[in-house]
Length: 326
Ligand code: FAQ
Image (cartoon, rainbow, N blue to C red; front, side, top):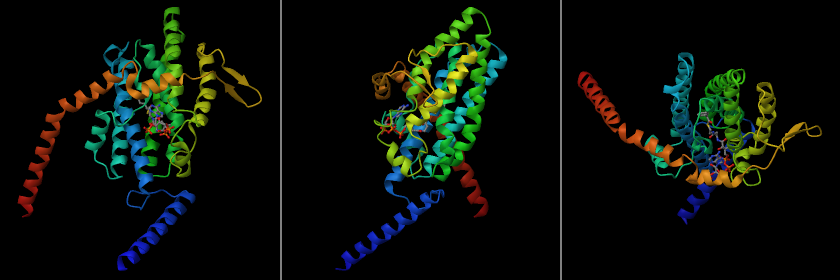
């Protein structure tokens, strides 16, 4: 009897907590790590924030490939800084994710075992220098459009991390566009290289926004929790509308024969995305999935001695301090 009463009490308590949580969301107040939150909210955030963090860290690899081959000192310095920024973004995001009660080790383990996803876009190869321009222009361009609404997401640590990330992404987008501009104002060979990079990165960039709203498993719930502020299709359309005029300025042709401005909607209509390619890449069968994951696993293995040395040093410091105070 007593047990039943406690159960009823706790159900009421939970209902109460749920109401407080929902009211906070409705008032656009941030949910902070120590606040009560539904377990599904916590898990969804761990999933999205960790996927985002992994994307930043894996996203360093395609560009890292070009640091030693950048065509000038100025280009090398800018690319080096960009790749370092991406490492920083990964670290803010892992930290935000840890506030939800999961350890960094678990997060890495999920990436290395293939349990956690990272963005499909980073499974494509960077074949020429123009790819570095195209990544900055298109991939960072898409990332900004996706991430600006996240500055206003409901979970405090994620929203705050996003503010800084977006400022840096906007510098990345400009450096990419400037590379494209330089190539397009160069020789015919350079312009062809820029066009070839656009041809290869355009469709994968559209896929970055995820499946269509109809196919998206998480969008409806994430919109209710104000984790997502705009749907995958809305963001994809915004990206296309913003990017087509930029391609015109460069004098490049977007590789889509069905791309056409629609006077009635005020948006560009566009061709069919190859969703079978997207799902193949997401499932691990893209051109570079194995290479990317192996690079991350090797980095983890090779860094083992550094982690051990750092722990031993921290231990020593701690012992010294307790000796002094004791
Ligand atoms: N790749 O129900 P939805 C960057 C999965 S950072 C792989 O629509 P959701 C910076 C999804 O996880 C780029 N998987 O999912 C940079 C789910 O599977 P699950 C990363 C994808 O979460 C620039 C399933 O499909 N940005 O670029 C992808 O509501 C340059 C169903 O999908 C972020 O992570 C994909 N593209 O919406 C770095 C931003 N799309 O988990 C270096 C934050 C979907 O159930 C160089 N994330 N899936 O097994 C988001 O906004 C969302 O998570 C979406 C997906 C929009 C990506």
